Amino acid sequence: MEKIPMTAGGHLALEEELKRLKSVERPRIIQAIAEARAHGDLSENAEYHAAKEAQGLNEARVAELEDKLSRAEVIDVSKLSGDTIKFGATVALVDEDTDEEKVYQIVGDAEADVKQSKISISSPIARALIGKAVGDSVEVAAPGGARAYEIIDIKYR
Image (cartoon, rainbow, N blue to C red; front, top):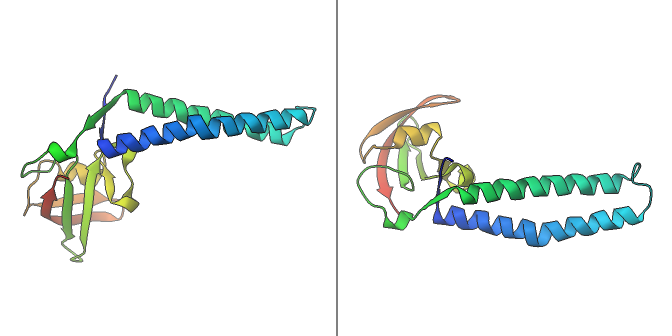
């Protein structure tokens, strides 16, 4: 079994989602199934089929989260340091074409969220950044064409 790297915060978020699915969603869906069953003929009961489908999706997500959590390799980013970029680093970059500054944290696949400036360790930009230091330039093959960035800061927090 392959370990899944993730930050402590990402691990906690997955545990909270799993707890919510088991303690809130599962009982709500069971109640919906029971109410739909009370309406009689199950073969033409849309509410029953919708509730059963919701139950299947919920249980699949529970199984997926349990698998990820069982294989998680939690890395405490606050204990990391160094001059080169590795998993967990928060990296400040400047786009060499537009001078636009961006800040990303490199995290595990399960917790990546670009809206929160968290990029997956397996993303093209993260793979290009790993092992680099402040002042280095990296070229990333992005969907919109190649982009060049200069690394201006590396933090572990």
